[in-house]
Length: 400
Image 1 (cartoon, helix red, strand yellow):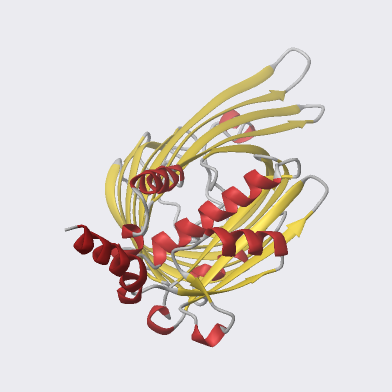
Image 2 (cartoon, rainbow, N blue to C red; image 1 turned 180 degrees about the vertical axis):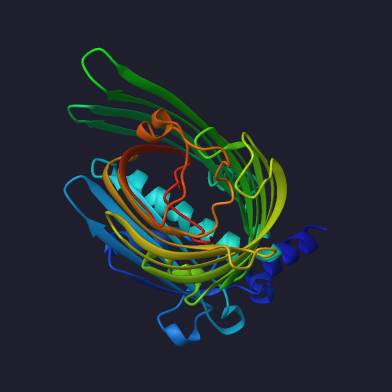
């Protein structure tokens, strides 16, 4: 019996690995210490010195500045994994210990393999405690949170405008999909001084909520379902509910998201609307169907990102009613978790079905109490936001 156990142990130790479909990895890392740490500690798969013979081409790029360390992890599948690739973008404080830095990169490295090149034999090579540790890491890849405050102050001799907006949004990453939600509330107060004795004031509130689910189809294609609710006295919406079904194509693989993205998307958007006042089309409520086409470009750099998009919309049952808009965003990271955001928006609307039929009083016009028909809209704002959540909050699916 002992001889049988001994022979089985020898077979398991020396021969069983030959039957495992192990991946080979070619690692290109510009940090020699990180490369040495990974090659010494990742023992499940082999590291190859020949790129063309490996299953995965793994690139790790680093960028260092006075306060932060930036690591970009990119994997490209080869051979049987040619259509699989992924990117994780990590930011660390400059005072992080070397052990903690290496350990975080090591875990991110394993998670990328687990997400994209997973096979059962890979997990079978881990002990139970190591599997539980990986499960915890995958869970940590989950919920991320962002709290943003926007304020605008405008003053002149006879007019003042104070505005505050609070927005909270969160998202959770899964293996092939993503869940997002957003809640925001804004309040604005305006003053118009007619003379020393007469002052007109107005108070306007807006509430918005949204939830969306994004599904990865492949490396260049995604789908999305989105539901939102909106209430605004200014826009004459007592209640507005949009349901959106969309599909997006990326001209570059989403794994290129750490450097650049060029995308086009189409969405079908049915809406149910209840108005405060009867509109210029004699409507108090209606169901609308809209086409939405978006063309966008985004480029990322270690300190932030810049994006530009063009959006075209039109109602299906009122085809000649449309809008075209241009949007630009700049995000700049300046402290851990803190970022500066600048947003610009230019819109040419020809689809303002929400304009009330009743006229406007002088007070409505002077205080911008109600939305009016216009040939264009221009908006520019700045904000500071704080993000927290999993240690992988800086990674993004780059879809939609």
